[in-house]
Length: 376
Image 1 (cartoon, rainbow, N blue to C red):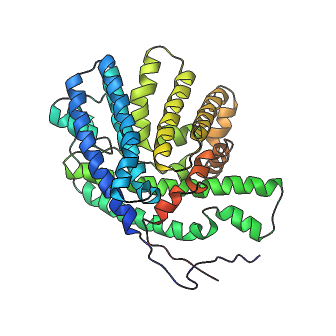
Image 2: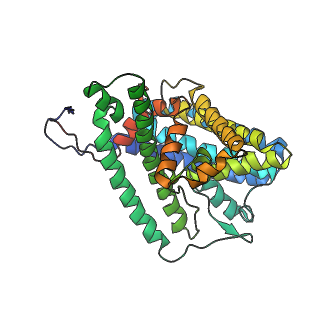
């Protein structure tokens, strides 16, 4: 079959890095940094009281919704210009919210609140710094250099991958099946798994780029950050391994401290604590998407993340049967294929929100990188 890829600039390559969204994002982040500093001081003064910290955390989380429209009108930009900055700001405000909650329940890393200066650093860090024996760990020699190299490599990989799938509307499997005239239930299954895979890879590259940049900022201040990812797409052999040990370890650690550990410590059964933690993750993504994705339909992220939580509970039940031996003996490629297929069983609202909205976030990612637009 022949697949024709169109372009608005036939036979040419384009380095379309948009300046206005980047400048708008930097302005939003400057304001966000000021708010985070102020919130760190306030939460330090409030101590560990739930009665004081929880309302303060709620007020902090509400602040972007109050400020967004008037600031955008003053700046003179559009929602599309502010999308990337809004996404980053929503993430930063959510970090502050969860760190305030973990302080109130006593799961903050020992040493993070040892002094006002250390607490401000911890609250402002985009990636968790490591602590041992109540003291921040110093990075090993060469780690800053390796993270700079990783940043460059991830940026290049993101640009290449965007160049490959953007001409297909970020749904390459669907485009190839349509061009080849393939249809029916098997084609629908292939499209579901294939486009979920390509979307997950692009989200992974984008978030890895952001977390690597956050790690560099932590390293530059003499602290050793945690890892952001551990090759989740091509090493995970099950949903539990994907979500629990490899995907977005920053969010993973934060949700464990602020939700899973307090609930499990209070005696809640592990499956219920897992579902509650995925519920907290759903709330985080609802907040993030509502701020950064115009046209977002509230509730769709929750369906996805609660569905993933149910997958983990189902896996726990299966591991109590003889089937667990089959999974442990499967070769890596088969395990990875199983995991990607299993993750695709849940309605793909998460990927759809990055692609199909009037102002898709994948479009904002594409504007960050140079890409080659091919035409046959």
